[in-house]
Length: 149
Image 1 (tube, rainbow, N blue to C red):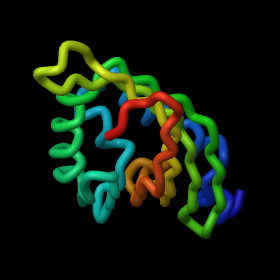
Image 2 (cartoon, rainbow, N blue to C red):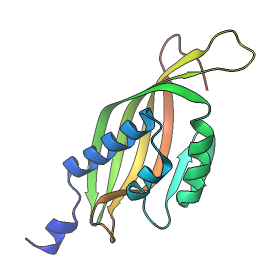
Image 3 (cartoon, helix red, strand yellow):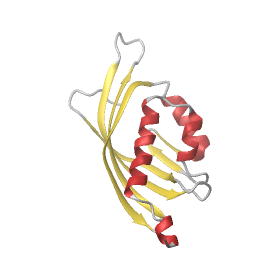
C-alpha cells in the first residue's frame, strides 16, 4: 500500500465521522467525546449565529446550544466527499429537528430544516482518524410550518 492510499480519506470514513458527529449532537454527548473528532489545531466552525475557532470556541458554542435546543434529531441526507490530497472537501445535507422553548411561551416550538454544509476533513496526524478542520453552515431550508431560529 502506498502512502497516498493511506492518507486519502475514503467516503466510508467521512460518512462515519458525520454519522458519529450527529449521533453525539442528538444525545448532547459529553463535551470530551468531540475532542477526537475535531482537528487539534486551527479548526473553524461557522454557524448561523457565530463563528468559532478551536476546541475552546466549539466548547462555548456547544454549552450554549444544548441549553436552548432539546429533542434533537439529525438525519443525514447526503455526504459527498471530494478527496484533495491529504484532505477532503465534503458537502453535507442534514435534516435537523429540534424543540425550543422561549419563555414565557406556554409551549415549545419545533424547528425542522435541512442544513446545507461544507466541511473540510483531514486525517489526524496524531490518531490517523478523520477529523473536521472546517465546518460551515452554508444555508438553512426550513420545512413548511417550522419555527424559525
